[in-house]
Image (cartoon, rainbow, N blue to C red; front, side):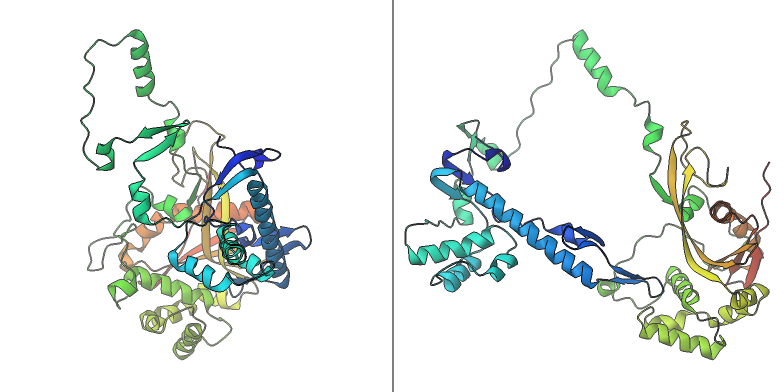
Length: 442
């Protein structure tokens, strides 16, 4: 009989085989950020939003250790139940290396008494308990436990026989030798009505295919760019924008030291995200602030050279930049999460989402606003754009980003109750601030 350990409680058998004892124990309950333990209560990690880090507290360390000890105790109880089901012979099966087998003999053959608690708690599998016990009992009472180590050659030699439903079945030697088996000839007789109906069921088109194509979640950026081509704004020598670039090899493999246009954009966003606008923010101060960011590991030293300090100082000297520097409350990297109807979008008709006919279908849309200026009666969105485009292409590119901006506007209105939400796209390459007009809706 093949039976689970839990179902074997209260039963006994002449011979019991317990397999897979070398499998790691599942003690991952304590790996989450929020822990609940009967003895400790609720334990949470500290989240530092300003530094964007989280770290353990005394409560989480105590709770994690308590949960780990309880998990090990449960594994011990399960092993006890399994091992006490046998009346005559108990066969324990597990996988381990020869080196570990030798280490058990060397460290535990002369041991007397219980296994130390520290060793019990360090175990990663049940075999980590049984190996030292077998070595210790074998050294004290030879023959009490018979230990057999099977090599790979032993297993390969016995691999052609398998036990199935109480009998031994021989595996086809062609399968063992990985030889090609001729397929069974196709039937040439006419199918019956039953077969015809079965084929029709298998080949029918699923009537809810459209619903299977609706994503559970999507980003505002991906929805904005889905199926659309960014306008180039006229001929020029600037490189074209590619929204889905081929993934590059990691730096440690390729050895590349050049910084791509996409990387330069990410670096610029990182710098603008962390700038201290209360400081002078001139060329010298910006370089000093970037040096401080490198010391804090937000940037690498070689990335600082790719920052366009001239574009940043230009922006901070514009009316929008001065408003950002002088505001009393500024939210940076503001995350938005909202439900968008699958047959429309977050704003009514702009954001592209695979459509269905069911109004109950919705998509969780995620977005992140670079900066939001908060005033008592209005909000102002600032979105940095590092697109390498000429000045003549700004209008077309801004129109391309309109669905994204309108999605931000609509959901900020919904969440804050503030009806006036201004928005500005800051194109750093051509050095143009484009103030997004309010889109009127009927």
